Image 1: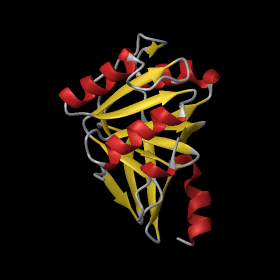
Image 2: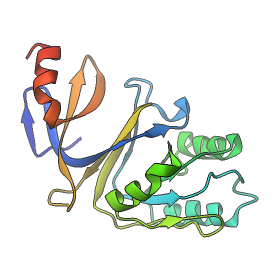
Image 3: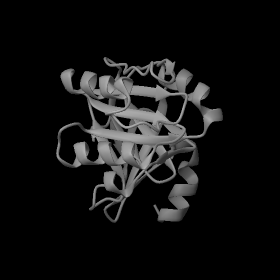
Length: 186
């Protein structure tokens, strides 16, 4: 991960922490770190409805995947739910390096907030679309939250600390810095 400055064992980067957003499957975890990660360039698709139809039944979902592949972007997909078939399709494509993707589950009530934070439209049903050319460097997801690392100077972002402890990374806002110092014994 690139950083703007390093403070002890903390990389300080511009970004957003997305709370109430969960990784959909362990298949997206990096085995050595226990978090999932996709890199720049990143396209985003924010769905208002659960994605229940697979790519063979949903031309809209197939179009999103094709658009991301053609633009050579990783795909951050956020929806209130997914069918097992949809998760399996994204996992296989991710594992085989066909399409780097990160499907995250979000509560329906948090979708409008995510729309404002990420600056992408919310799409529903058969009108899914991917927004590319976003100032996103990478996305890191844990089972409980996700961190969107943005380009420096991106509006609406804050300084976020990414901490490496024993090979396991966790995202934490710098406002909790003193608690982290006490916990980690800095």
